[in-house]
Image (cartoon, rainbow, N blue to C red; front, side, top):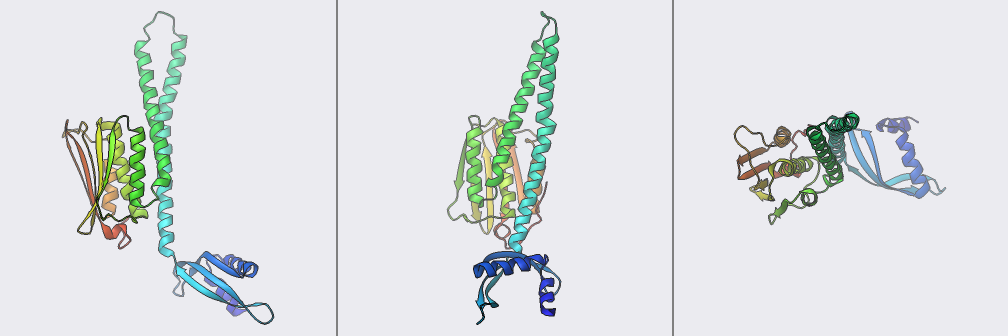
Length: 296
C-alpha cells in the first residue's frame, strides 16, 4: 500500500497511473504513453513510456519491462508553438474587427444613405469612398485567409515552411514573381519554436513586399556561413526614403530576431528596392541554445 501511494504521488495526475495499468492489462503492452511526473527533487518531467507486461504463473502482471524517454524539451516546444498560434489567432481576429469589419460597416451604411438621396445629386465622391473601403476590406480578408493558411505551414521544418510561404505569395502576389534560393548545405531539419520565429519574419517581409512595394520581382535566400543562418529577402520595388517607414510590422520583426540573439538589417533606396537581412546562430535554431521567444 505504501509503495502504491508513493507511485501515485509521482504522477502529476494520479489517474494516469490507472490508465497506464488498464492499457497494459488490456493489450499486454503500452506504447508511447506520455505522462507528466514529479522527479525526486520535486521538479516536473514529461516522459514517454514503452513497456510490456510480464506475467506470473497465475496469469497476473508481475512487472513491466520497457523504456522511458524524457520528452520534456519536446513538450516545452509544443507549448511554445501553441502560444504562438494563439497570439496569431488573436491578432488576426483583432485586425478583422478593427479594419475589415469597420470598412464593410462604413460601405454598407454609406450605400444605405445614398439609396435615400434624391436623384440628381453628385454621388461620385461618396461612391469613390465606398469603393476604397471595399478594396481595403477585400485586402484585409485576403491577408487573413493567407495568415490562416500559414498556421500549419509554420510548424514544418524551416526550409519547407519557407517554400510554402513563397508559393502562397506567388499565388496572391498580384504579378510579383517570388523566387526562393536555398544554398547547398542548408540544414533541412531546422524546426521548432525558434525556426517558427524566422519563418514569421520571412512571412512579414514578403507581406510588406506584396502590400507596399509594388515590386515585380523578389528573392528569398537561405544560407549558412560560419555557423550562422543567413536569410535575405530582396525586392525591386519602390523602396523607401529616409522619412518613410517600410510597411508595417518592422518592430515585431526586429523583436523576433533579437529574441533569438540575432541581427536584423533593413535597407531601402527610394525607387530601387528593399533588402531585409537577418542572421541567427545555427545552434539557436537547432536547439543548441535557446533565445527568448517573442509573443508579439
